[in-house]
Image 1 (cartoon, helix red, strand yellow):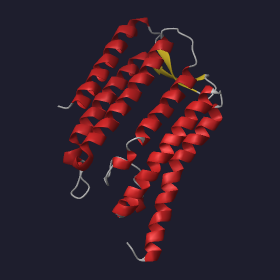
Image 2 (cartoon, helix red, strand yellow; image 1 turned 45 degrees about the vertical axis):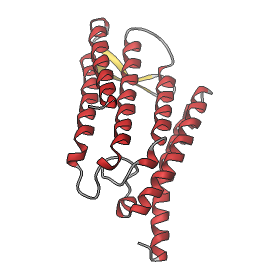
Image 3 (cartoon, rainbow, N blue to C red; image 1 turned 90 degrees about the horizontal axis):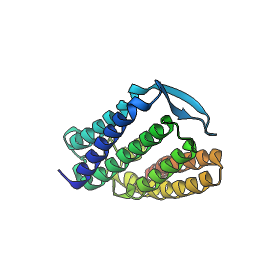
Image 4 (cartoon, rainbow, N blue to C red; image 1 turned 90 degrees about the vertical axis):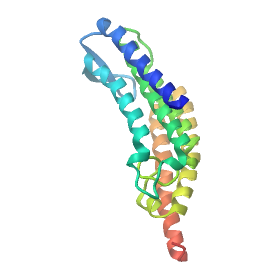
Length: 212
């Protein structure tokens, strides 16, 4: 088992322990969602917080089994180090969000909506950092029909996504710290849509040239 898996398992166990320790001190219903201005608008029974470490464990297991699940010519083994990295940062994001919810549930008032947005933006930058290394598969990456249909389109799309995600994440952090949360959502949406649009554009370009 690689260090990435051990680290992800450690974060999962830590999240489970933190939830168990905080559980007796939490109200019966905890806030689990806030609007863009930080006002609570979603609530759950506190026992549901145990679903987060369960989700983390499920993600680790799924990543471990992806090579077996992947069909030939779309193997995840070709970028196993990258898929492990993506698993770790996703598990880390879940642990971070769970920590924010627990801290708030214990009665600590702070800008949780802004903290969550910054965390999401940093996650997007970390994601973009390795997108160019993701090879064609059915589970990870910008999986548009045009990218899946052609390896050149796939590779070009992931490289564009890498740049778009890093820029969108950085802009998102800045906008959130400036209190411009609505513009944060716009930046994230643009960053997500750019590689999708490019995928279609590049596919049609190759199609016109007769290079598909």
